[in-house]
Amino acid sequence: MDAPQPTNLPDLLRHSRFDDAQAIFSGTLFVAIAMMLFGQAGLLTGGTAGVAFLLHYATGVSFGKLFFLVNLPFYWFAWRHMGRAFTLKTFSAIVLLSVMTDWAPRYLSIDSLHPAFAAVLGGLLLGTGCLFLARHRASLGGATVLTLYLQEKRGWPAGKVQIGIDCTVVLLALFVIPPQRVGWSVLAAVVMGLFLWINHKPGRYAAT
Image 1: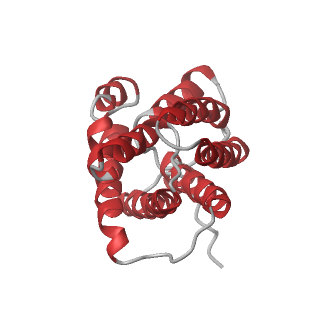
Image 2: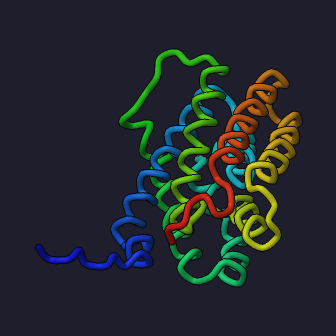
């Protein structure tokens, strides 16, 4: 019987382009569904997505267009501190999310949605989507770029940093949307942050 061939472990831990592509698509789709839930329930999230939601509620311009524009300044930071591959994958995810959020309502509608359900499910979908992207060296720009950078360079837990940033942005929404909706939005931010805190820790996922 032939002896087993040695396994090249580094090759097994390296993501292929197809691996990255399916993760970016799947993660972005999860986030797009979360954005639809938040939009229908009148909620918002943190980071640049939260800023885009605030501008959307204030101006009526579509979330997708605003999200793409708000993220433009962060590409320089990502390129300088996170590398070319990370920046290009992040740019792809942002463009994809902008398109998905503008087109998805044509194919999916919900007749009744309680804001508590939207907050919990949306927070979990958002956290799951961001985890997919983070494990394939990508993000949705803005605060996510910063949280991943601080975790890699300083060892700060991404979930904790994300909770702080998201809750700050959501609280600023008190000037734009009713307090009750702000409260549900804070719940969504906490659910997402706790999910990332538990599931995205340095060294837990070895593939690159």
